[in-house]
Amino acid sequence: MTKDRVLIFDTTLRDGEQSPGATMTHAEKLEIAELLDEMGVDIIEAGFPIASEGDFKAVSEIAANAKSATICGLARANYKDIDRCWEAVKNAKSPRIHTFIGTSPLHRAIPNLTQDEMAERIHDTVTHARNLCDNVQWSPMDATRTEWDYLCRVVEIAIKAGATTINIPDTVGYTAPAESADLIKRLIAEVPGAGDVVFATHCHNDLGMATANSLAAVAGGARQVECTINGLGERAGNTALEEVVMALKVRGDIMPYDTGVDTRKIMNISRRVATVSGFAVQFNKAIVGKNAFAHESGIHQDGMLKNRETFEVMKPEDIGLSGTSLPLGKHSGRAALRAKLNELGFDLADNQLNDVFVRFKDLADRKKEVFDDDLMALLSQNESGD
Ligand code: KIV
Ligand code: ZN
Image (cartoon, rainbow, N blue to C red; front, side):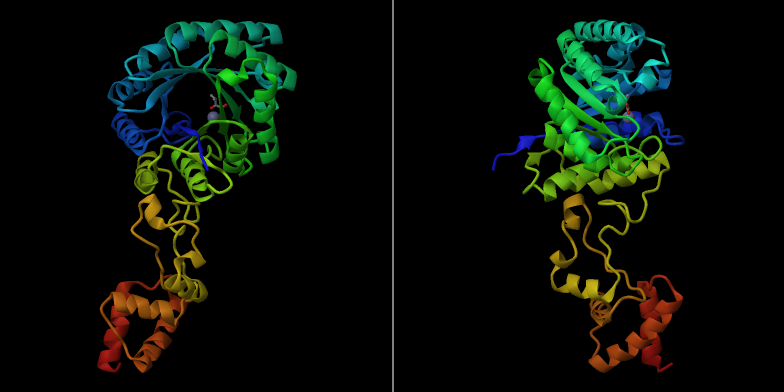
């Protein structure tokens, strides 16, 4: 089966950094951009150049250093923002300007523009961006709460003005998977010129549906997914890059799409983003959580020791981990205890193992996790007959 290519657009350094408290230093942004570039992300949204001198410098330096990724900057729908953005990205091997405006009734009310006035603004600003750069992305912010007819109208205007990528943001994480697929499918079918551009999906996780919505949008015809490492982002965050990439890799049977991401680099960048942003990853987070490849219960550990596919749908090595972890706790059984003791160099006879197992269970009832040192202490009690 031939697979379609889905572009991965990472916005950890722009939308991710917009999380209250997630601000990164200049050096940290450069480091994350380098890791993203090395892992094969197609487009890096490096920042919002007009927002601050620091953002401008970071985007410029990331643009100058990038080896293969397209470097994109964000700009509101005005010439000043767009010019500043172009200044920052223009030295990239492959630069992109991303310009946006809120098109839903709630967002149109803020600049107090009529539908016609906003349509004109979109035409003028996309045309301006396209005169500077061949690669222009346009987003109708809050697209999923924009009237259907108006959304079609402005998407058509942006395409005619020269946008090469049309991004459809679910800015407040409001949509549901079936709607997400349908929205992209209908836009592609009904907007004149839609076949000449790439449609992108940009989902937020307010209702916990960002990854599902992004994958549904791909099924509907989107060929660019916007996401962040660890799902970092405002409020409940953005679509998590690692979830989309691994879902496409593991379920290629029903979602036949390739990405250019080297998945073995996922764990390292996840840890670096957690460290530099100060946003720890929850233990049970899909793919990169501490417990994502950990099994404590006896039945699961026994199954894993016999065949890892019993309780794992992907290999930990595929995301850059050295292996599965079988932490010992009160739910663990003899098989896992024996395996751990063997790993520590002890091969006990059955009666000795039984004896250690009884004391191990007693300790595990009092302690959340039993570590190697605890086992060594139990074994030395065994030897001394204590
Ligand atoms: O969520 C959103 O609508 C955005 C836009 C700026 C694309 O981040
Ligand atoms: Zn966003």
